[in-house]
Length: 267
Image (tube, rainbow, N blue to C red; front, top):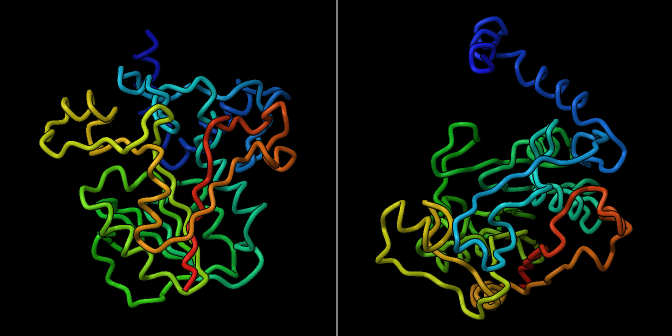
């Protein structure tokens, strides 16, 4: 019966109206005062669960696996997206000074906010998505040296076989003093990044890395891999400044164990 009703509503409701109606539904059904989404400003009784449950993801992979409180039911933002937005807001001047910003594989809600800011010369890019401004392979970025003031590239590097080349390209195209936020799923139990390029099937990669299009699981050595590309890396633990990131009650529904990898081109 439910499926029949859903099918009927799809026919009845125009495509352009569906996102707005889903947002209204989410605001009403999930209304409460325990949580708040910093991107859409909805007051919520809970966030929605999200994530896969492959056995490898039980190895404490931050940013991967099932999370009970991950997805905003109104705007669809993820916990990791909310963390990046709050970091941008509280720890950078991206919303205050003129910046040329490259956003790779842009998160939808964050992209909407960044695109609306008149001080940001904003460029979105992806290797396959049609909903971006340029097609881009980040192992071969077709922009000159020192092109961007800032880069946001979250949960992309784990998809790329030659991630060292990608890191070097991101470094090359940043201006001196520029910065990048480079989030990845990261294991808290492994010292060294695990990768096995002989695994090429979707099923094999799901079992080995937790997702069919991932080629590795990053580990404690991730910061060092970024440093090899030239970056100076600050690892920010949001709980150290909890008052700006949802407080002890974690009002914004962030992952308690996720850090921000803030990589600076120092020369």
